[in-house]
Length: 219
Image 1: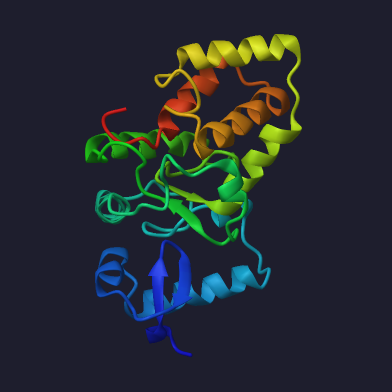
Image 2 (image 1 turned 180 degrees about the vertical axis):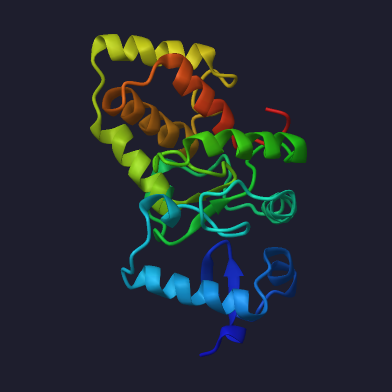
């Protein structure tokens, strides 16, 4: 097998005819694409890679730098046409997916570029926390499974349940998402983790929920 036999989907590679459009948008041609393929193989073989980076797709780079305007535009152009993220997807559906896959695209309204840029830049403040995705429209199944695990395993005390309800009232969607789909349970688990393990306040949780909103539109 050689690199020309692979199609890049996010940071996922599968044996297929290469998509010219995706390779152009993602900058996958030539040496950069081969380097990314080698990096992906190292990751699959258990090579050293920081925990947060395993959850971060590489349209604009795998490091902690804020993506450039050009990188953000490329990501937007690609993700606004992805549909593996949708409202009908349930937590149990996510649990059945391969951990190497990604949940990409919007679930309700069309993505708006200006709001997308605001979300990405806002989320950079939390890039040291692996439980917070860097892009609400490109989430690894591995990360979603981890957060769903928190939703099932973390039991809130009565006072913590009250704080959770306050976070819901403060959030723009009045909860982790606009509907009780996979995102509702996923980011509900995230909130339980942040509240019980890191001592986050309802306002802090609501702020992150708003930045992670994957419904499209203006937020």
